[in-house]
Length: 91
Image (cartoon, rainbow, N blue to C red; front, side, top):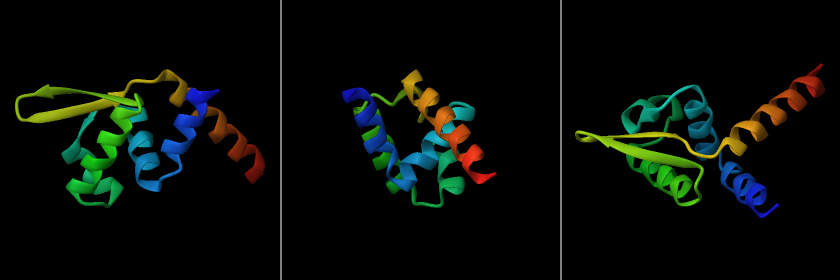
């Protein structure tokens, strides 16, 4: 229960939620996240750091770039369930 609560608290921020949605598709570096998120590189980096501290994303360095990917499979499951509920409710 505590892990789910931690995930929900992390995803209640619009910027963090958007970042996680983008990382559902594939691993990305900060420079790939900034345009679709619509925030500054600094803001995206700060939010990625928070997500990493919470164990939701993990990173790897390749040269000067840092790439992020989802680290917690429970996040994927929660978002898929939420998306299905939303689609049912929309109809």
